Image (cartoon, rainbow, N blue to C red; front, top):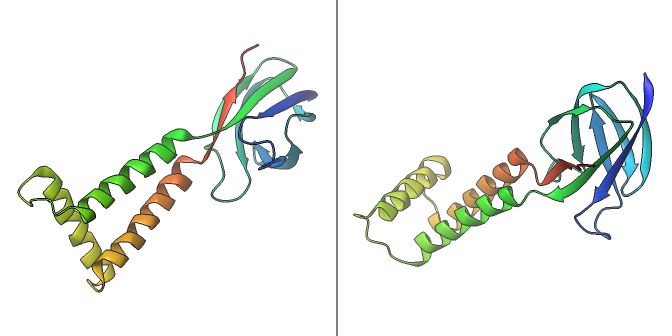
Length: 154
């Protein structure tokens, strides 16, 4: 094994995160952002994941390392936030406006209310449906990962 230099560029916020946990092939280190670190790796494919906590994490990504100095950007995963925003907006529109139940949006509202009644017992439907919506958004963001690793092309 030889020492590879890994550089993680912080593209999120300079004050929000100054260090993150980098996991490469089941070995984890706390690393400062925007600084070179050395890691004993061989050339070839390795599994990378970066995280701060169970919400602010990236998906596991297999990356083929061929160079001695390897640079990656850490960004927010706007796809996860966009999907969550779309679902929240749709739910707000369905709750706020009395949509005719014969339309396709009305069918979505019926399905939403059935889910709420089945899982939450039908009490205080609006408040409980908002809680269910928050749980769904939480699952989407943690599932897709709030952070994103991108390999920087040299």
